[in-house]
Length: 471
Image (cartoon, rainbow, N blue to C red; front, side, top):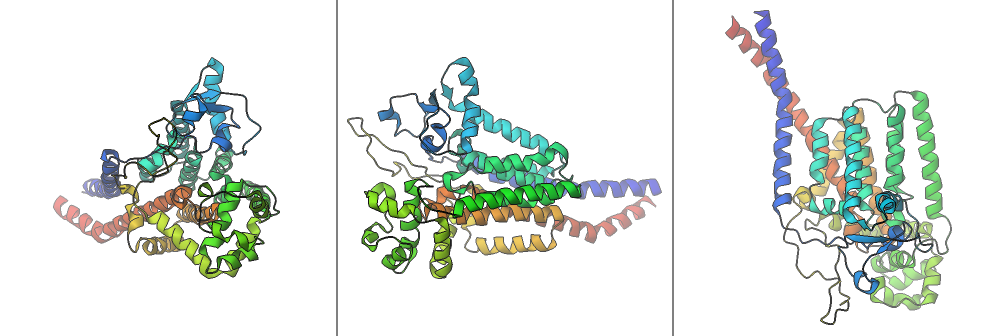
């Protein structure tokens, strides 16, 4: 009788443990199906990081420049000597690695080499997460999120969003691991930090803060202190470099957007906002006008170069209403359920670029995986869920929530400080992914809590019935 009772309890435990997994696989299938079967009209701007990624990595257009400069799906790239012009970024490391086979064979680089590299990095993270005993459901979820066309297409683009997406996913996986980070696995967050810096030319010095919680997870007190000290030092130095000083430390386009699509657009009095930042009020006509649609005189570029990011932070702190408007614009950008159009130039009948950024066809598919952002109360529900996880979640869950929340918050701050409100949807792709992952984490924890409550409610009844039938 005891043997039968033990078998019944064991079967009940296996069944209850399988229920959340079955539910999650079903939910993943529901989310994945429409994304795969949908027909999104998306462009992939491979030359979007031409100056910051391709030139420093020694890559240039294989086709004639006057034609290919306006092409946004360019599968073939020629190997050149690394250019001294351009803006250095850790994203160039990824491009350098992708070009190694081509350099060895003396042939052009094809875009599939970059995709293969990203998939290899994703495979390494999966293997590492499996060894650290990350819950299978969370691994499945991460892969499903990449089925979103808006996310997946960045694994076939030189835009630096791709490695940043992998870094966020890897950091969240490792935070949820059942085993502490020890030995060589403890170096992974530092590698992720380096890759994370590749996301857009303004953010490589602030987003490392998102990795700080990982330094607190270790089975060794000495190792924990050492990693925390290293990450704190790196973050402070990077932040100091970002905020301190002025001069031509950022591309002119970013300096322009940070002011004229930032304070000058958001303020009730644009001339006053410009004067407070040390910009002549005679340039007020540029307020709200993107860099590409106006002529920026050299005198204005010199004045903009003298505005530091610390000046912008001080301005937003002293004008809370404008800061709230910026946050509202970021919220609306994150809440748009349509696929992002990354831009595509057309051609005139004579074969010259038409110079328009308007897509010829409207997107025909919703981003099903991220529809929760478009709910009227989605943001409030998300904040309540995150507060619940921080209060009641296990230590590793709180750690993952801290990483994802800091990624969302810092992503918004860096986008606004770096480029104002220009192209917020594109600049907030990584923040949006962190939002999706945190929402999924909350959903998964609710499934587990429901399973535990079900076992507590019906487990005793099942056991009594089993004993009764056995007798």
